[in-house]
Image 1: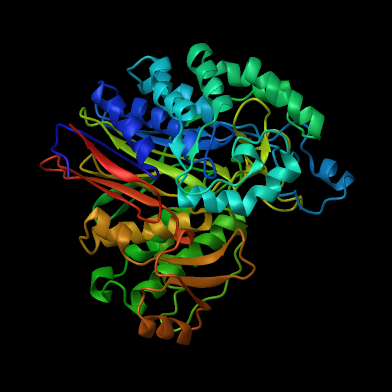
Image 2: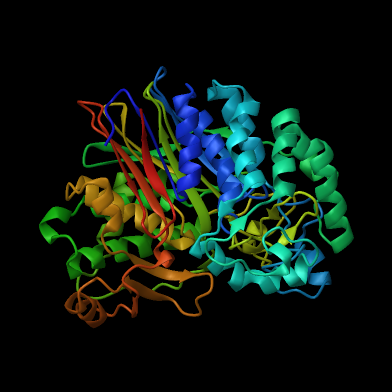
Amino acid sequence: MAPPSLGMVVCPHALASQVGADVLRRGGAATDAAIAIQAALSVVYPPMTGLGGDAFWLFYDSQQQQVQGLNGSGRSAQAATIQAYRDRGFDTIPQRGPLAALTVPGAVDSWHQAHQRYGILPWEELFQGAIALATTGYPATASQVHWTRRDHHHFLAHSPSDCPFLPQGKVPVPGQTLTNPDLAQTLQTLARDGAADFYQGSLAARIVSHLGEVGGLITAADLAQHCSDWVAPISTSYRGYDVYTVPPNSQGFALLQALNIVAGVDVAALGHGTADYYHLMVEATKLAFADRDRWLTDPAFGEIPLADLISRDYGDRQRQRLNWQRAGTYEASAIGGDTVYTAVVDSRGNAVSVIQSVYFDFGSAVVVPGTGFVLQNRGCFFDLNPATANCLAPAKRTFHTLMPSLVLQGNRPHLVLGTMGGEGQPQTLLALLTRVLDFAMAPQAAIDAPRWLWGRTWGDTTTGLTLEGRIPAAVQTALGQRGHPVQSAPDWTATMGHAHLIRIDPTTGLREGGCDRRSDGTAIAVS
């Protein structure tokens, strides 16, 4: 816990948390610390994030006492058309390689936009921690080794020369000191020349040149035209709290709809961890996902009845469709989930909730030579069927899983929370919110409690209800008897995402952080 005068950071890697804490100690704002953490995570957590990815942000401004959103997702290349892929013989967009890297990376510009509006410290100072880690090195975690071993064949196929994640061409071992001098140089360029270099300068030229050589679609014009967008967040009320997330092209409205469905049930009376509890959570998720998959797109390319979808009246009608004795049927899409979430609160009362990703682990596996980072493959989630809402079109943002969240009580931040996990993000946030707001769990207890995942995250071949093994066998059996396709997982599995949470007591201002032990992170209170 941290006294009210102190700041707090939490993210999925302890070294990146330390970088953010150091920024707060130097008088930086929550936004400064969040940017520094994202830069550090690009060094020490490369399977999950990097400069070649996207980001979504929520900011609580303590002076204005309001929440602001920032959409830092990139748009598809002008040459990225359905016909372009059909002409190459594809029925679906490849998941790896240059044709998967068809959307402009938006994260770096979002850092710039965030700093321009909410930053205090000089821009160049925010990169020093990350540069030091990339230069002097850090110990490889078991997690990074696992993902590198799993994906090294993708690097051999798409980035065979001088891959920064395969030292001397080999998968690292846990504890091995890793450096990334190319990424250190890239970060130094950004610190010195600003984010514009990534989109219109020397870094942009490197990206375009390499993609041109390997058959990619992004051009100099695509990069130069990119911009992040400040957006009005969307929200609903739950148990007297205001729950905020970001609007489409994010899937965040699925969480709000699920909360509206659950709000009409006395969840506390069901008992935490009972078959009734899990059944309600899963069925509410299914109903929300049906609407998500029907409507979610770039709002510049299609009308979304968003106000209706997140209204309490609609949630009440959806609740009437629930069958307490039988699982409903719905087929989910396959969604990747390799992402990082960061929560920061500073001594001024500002809060930042930010989530960043390269989509699949190590994204497209295309490393831009000399830069030290991979390009994301977020665009491979576009559909090549023109009749679907998420169909591919030039300069379009795809259906996005990233969804940072904030909870306010009396116009003051109460919870700063988020998670990686693709399809699991709305479900894990639903779990955290009900555990904290209905069952009065502490942040760490809410994160540690066993989780579920309904759907089919990338890598799975079937749709099912995956339950961590710590959920009692009797509960798993009862859910199976209601028709849920139960699959038992290990007691602790990263499949359930890496969730992080800061709670701020509205009366005392006391901060309490929780960090997912499924990750490599930690929560740090700043003195």
